[in-house]
Length: 158
Image (cartoon, rainbow, N blue to C red; front, top):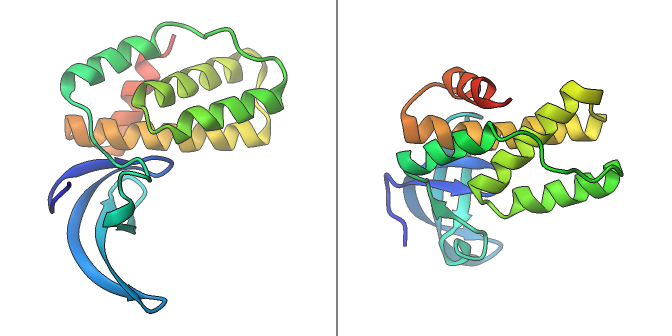
């Protein structure tokens, strides 16, 4: 169970800090909600406490894992599906897992593919979303700005 002040990741949205836990009545039902502040995208979310496990909420990673992520970013592109729609679907599934390694690989592969032959509009949007998710966690773990997190990612992709 999480508590106020915990730094957590909400898959598909990124990393944030639990600012409060409040009881709210929504559609006639009372429930407790985490009030999650996502500093990178300057957004607040209410996440039902009872559904936190089902939604994939997890603690942010530690510094050691960040170093492993930076290595993953520098490994070069995996063999990618050539059909963009299949690649898009596969990448979306990877992002939805909430696994930082999966997100990092999606970011790396799409950045390299963009440099090689360009991305479709949908893949550009996906890259931006995945990069935001990755940056948010890196920024919270390393206590750096969004810009510094983005530069860290850029510097490690080869």
